[in-house]
Image (tube, rainbow, N blue to C red; front, side):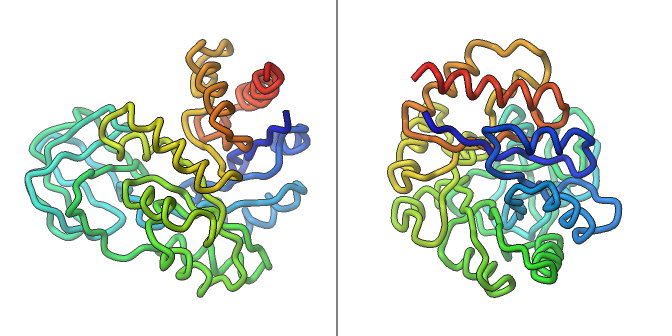
Amino acid sequence: MNIHAIVTAPPYAPFLGEVARHPLVCGLRLNTVMPLREGPAEALERLRALGQPLWVDLKGRQLRVVGAAIPPYTEVRLSHRIRVPTPVDAFFSDGNECVRVAAIDGDRLILEDGPRRLIGPGESVNIVHPALEIEGTLTATDRAYLAAMRALGLKRVMLSYVEAPADVEEVRRLLPGAEVIQKIESQRGLSHARRHGATHGRLMAARGDLYVEVLRPHRIISALRDIVTADPEAIVASRIFDSLGYDPIPVSADIGDVAFLIGLGYRTFMLGDRVCLQRDSVLEALNLLSAVAGEF
C-alpha cells in the first residue's frame, strides 16, 4: 500500500536531513508557533534546502494564548478578539481541561478558576459555542511568513481553522498562486468541507482541535469519514502515534488508530510536534506507519 507522511520539522533539529531522506516522507511542515532565531526567512531557506516540499502551517483564526497566565483569578490574552455569550466553557490541553469563563473583553478571557497551572504562550484554546465570533483571520505572524514566502518564491501553505472559501482567498491575495491545504478543525469547517470538498485546496482532518470541537467524542468518526469522502486525497493529522513521544514502545491503541484511518481511506499522514521533537521517536513513527500499512 502506498502511504506517505508529512513530518513536522523542529527548525533547529540536527536530525532533519536523515528524516527528510526516509522513504515515506513526502514533505516537511513548519509549525509557525515555534520560536525562530532570526525570523521566518532564515528558517524557510534552511528547511527548503533539505529537498522536500516545505509546508508553512499558518494559524489563521485558531485561538492561542498570548503571553502567560497563572490561575486562579487571572485573565488569559488570546491571539484574536472574540465575542460570545458568557459564562462559557473554554478547553485547554487538547480538551482535557475545562475552564469556566466569567467574562470576555475583546482578546481577554476572565476566568472563574483554573486550569491550576501556568498557562503558557502558544497554547491553543477551544471555545465550542455556536455564537462564537472571532475577529479577523490571519495573525501578524501569519502575514510575516507569507511576506517571507513571497520573497523566497515559496507557495505551499497549510491554513488552520478553514471555515469558508474567503479564508483561502485571503491567503492567495497575499501569496498569489499559493497551494493551500485546508485544515478542518471545527463544526463550521466540516460544513465547508462537505459543501466544497477540495475545490479550494486539499483537505486535512486536523484531529487535535477537531476532536474537541465535535463535542461528543464518538462524532470524530463521522467527521473523519466525511472529510475523506469530500476529498479522497485528504491528509489526516494530529494524535498520530503520540505515545512514541513518551516511550519507545507504542501503545496498542495507537496502532489500531492508524489501522482504522487507513481503513477509512487516508493515505497521507502528518506527524505532529510531540512525536517529531526527537530523532528516535520520529523515525520510529515513520517505520511503524510503514509496518502498519504493510498489514493491508
